[in-house]
Length: 246
Length: 246
Image 1 (cartoon, rainbow over the protein chains, first blue to last red):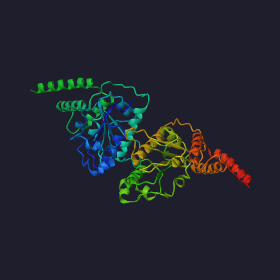
Image 2 (tube, rainbow over the protein chains, first blue to last red; image 1 turned 180 degrees about the vertical axis):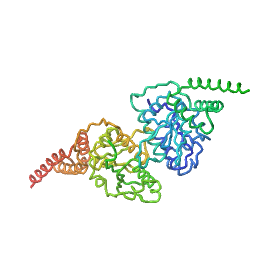
Image 3 (cartoon, rainbow over the protein chains, first blue to last red; image 1 turned 90 degrees about the vertical axis):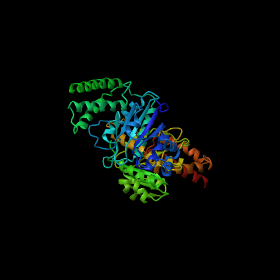
Image 4 (cartoon, rainbow over the protein chains, first blue to last red; image 1 turned 45 degrees about the vertical axis):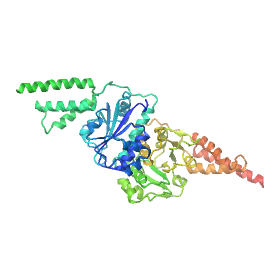
């Protein structure tokens, strides 16, 4: 494996700090990232301070596409990893970064793949974490686990490079065609509507129950074909339930 | 292994940037470091900016002891690792960070051990690198390998925590009592004087030849006892050569 043929997108959601963003742009250059993508930045990503911190990576700031929400930023990406520093991630399973990053790198070349970093002040929401197929967290001291955003990015991008340079990857690819996050999300929306319609879900409990369903599907490493299949079932059921009412 | 009983000293040589120093102080808190030590800082390490970046790690800045040179800063440390970002490290062998850090962690508890980081603008000199028993470098893109100082620190301290948390270390300790850097250095000075005195070395070639000797000794993972032994030989020879002259 090598990072050369990988189209790695680093996605930062609502960044607050120009120093952090500039530092991440430098890291993109240090570790062969393909593109920096920003979701609704809360600072000026092309400020003098940001560019100074970016050093030779400032073109990542200048060329960064901006997206209105996370799903738009990752919709062309076949494999997506999110990073989580919070402890209250609920039922979302955390993967070891080794397994998750090797899975990430075993993606076919020329498919865009993304790593998502959250806000400095409150990370990624559980709904955002669930848009990724795998969520990772980093080992830190329990006394003060809160890493600076760009330090978390440095650690993960360096790990990615180390795994990419390993002569023989021990990672055995289990699935050939995992579902895209956008497909996955569209299916979940369809399924939720259905489950509300049929009274399996109530508005106030919907999110908690859908979290369990997402967890199950991610654990299964659900493929595009499987998503199509169960989405077909859901659609059929929605059609059926509507016809029945009339 | 655990980091709990390890007295890890992070040594920064002549730091220039307050943002970098503050960031490193935060990392010390994130990763259970025991003390931050500074060698002749070129900035104000307790400035408002440094403390702001340090967040909950600011006591590392406030309590940082200052040393006039690197050897003073590491003289109580039994195992010392230096980090090298430069390509022109000459004959100094580079270790994989995995091997070096596992060796580092297998040090007996309650012995101070140190990781050295160099200047932002020109790293550590070859002479400084040779004060450490092992030198490591990090994988980066060949196009732009220069990492920000605090990012290098983040990557290495995180690796250290990961290896410390591994349930069973596969590292087999080969030596029980490696020579302290100060002992090693004193011996090298003695030996150089001798070799100059006996005409084996000339002033203009002394450094290059001593580098080869240091390399040999580090490769052998020389112990305190061995250093005492060969230092005894050197002293004896110096006494002999002086007596002969008179």
